[in-house]
Image (cartoon, rainbow, N blue to C red; front, top):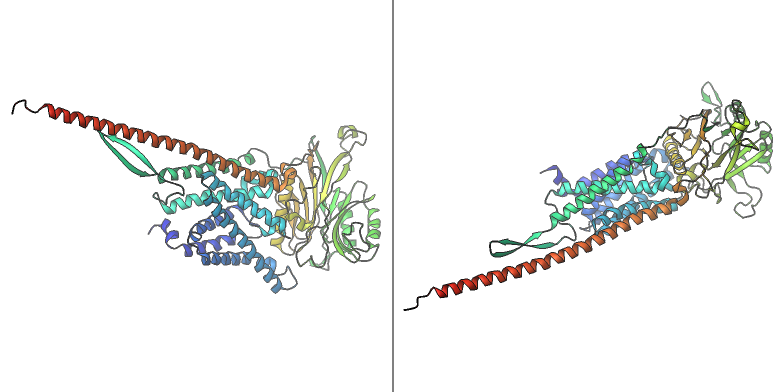
Length: 595
């Protein structure tokens, strides 16, 4: 028994073993592209054996196995996410089952749409479009966005540049397209050279002339169909490899911090660690954050505090605190203060009512509050019962950066202000899990402020990767400050990929943006996920049309071939009849004249 025949002879054992094992590496809090492709290949091959046989029990068994594997890799991060470990595990089990069932449904939908199509190229492009659309819909409807999807965020290799063009939807399309290619190769390897007949293949009549005797024989067309499928697979693989080429043609390093065509400025994370003999003496207070920020403002123009760094409960407490802090801020420096507060007056639009709690960020300068933002996506159960989400999109604040001492004002920027504008926006922690976080911005931001507070290192890394993805999609930088246990912090975007540090501890860093700064939004920021999905379905539609046209041309050619064969056969029969007639006449002339 050959290795290739094992999945055919023992499909249940093979697929129910490979599926969960690959899920352990593919469906971690930070999904990786290669393992996810391999998992999808196995599930597609299994679907091709289960669905025709109506083996629904095998499908349910695989959903359960993959759900268990997903729960295992997420268990450590989920145990302390909610009030009790039991509640956390119940929610995790339900979420894992739902996401796995959605993936199984997308694979089944891809199977049926491929079978309904009559062209090779439509079969190759329908499943990737279905897969990308499925997870875009899940992201839009899920309270935790892309954290609940089978979408890769790490090890995407040369496809990173696609984020600025089509966001995560195009990355998901690449995953499914590679799964189609590899599944085709694996299926052909398992079936061997005399594999099963392609759907839609037929027999064609071939007429050959052997001497004067007409011979009509039937030759199966399966080989030509398989050749067409192989060509499709090769072309699809070539297209996918070509899509990775642009990333190797452009530089992916941060701009220098000292050059005539860049604007340098300092940013910092204020994360004090009150301790005695290496042990924390308690959570940092407002006084601790202010003292830490005062030491950092000589190095940074923007000093960001973590999410919920301080809490305000009494009426007027926030305004009084900010008034005191603003007097200690140097001119031209801003503190990004993450806070929670109790609302004491109802807002004009009715979103906030007295007694509600909200999670927000303000940008505070010597002149007072210049920017405000409130968290829109709350952690289910953990925050959704105690806080109220906002419905306002992020906006832009323009910081005017004066010339440094080594520059003269006219050389630094044109008048009358002689300052360089730096556009800044903000979002908070879980808001970064949706690709539409910054869809409403009128221009590209130079810097995104991102306070966060996670509860486990794997969650901190997962959210860091989501923040990186949003920075790449918008073509900006994100300043990520995670004040949670095991959280990471750093700068991402514009060639920066690695986080700066893990855990508490303040830091400062000089960054730069090109001057003059290109405020044009990226292709994805302009069109969003909807435009990306329209593009992938347009590819599928063009493939279907091309296949249909090719099919019509082939039908005409086959019709012309059959007509020619019929005409040739008629001519052959006429020639044979004429020759036989001549032979009979010749035999008649050879009879003797006299008996």
